[in-house]
Image (cartoon, rainbow, N blue to C red; front, side, top):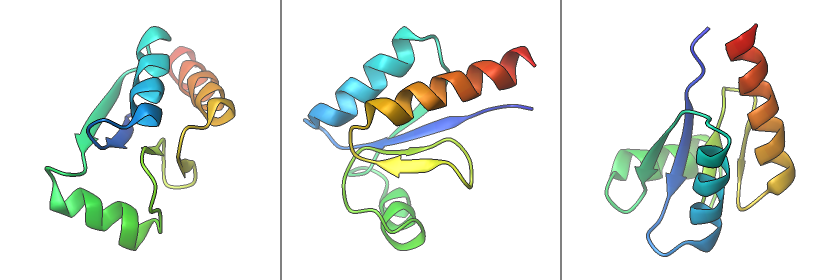
Length: 86
């Protein structure tokens, strides 16, 4: 199964930068989407997911969150590592 984490970010967002750094340091593949550049992405995270704070991290349909959340970052790293090796 191909895990594709998407991180929706905004320029100058401390939590966004830290989230990206943590996943990159763990070697977890992800796609970063700038919410100020992609109106459809902004609509998705606000209308579909109901979030108003960046970053918004989407691991899959059931596992997503907004804001800097170290516990969820660690969960995502473990989850993706398990999927990749399993």
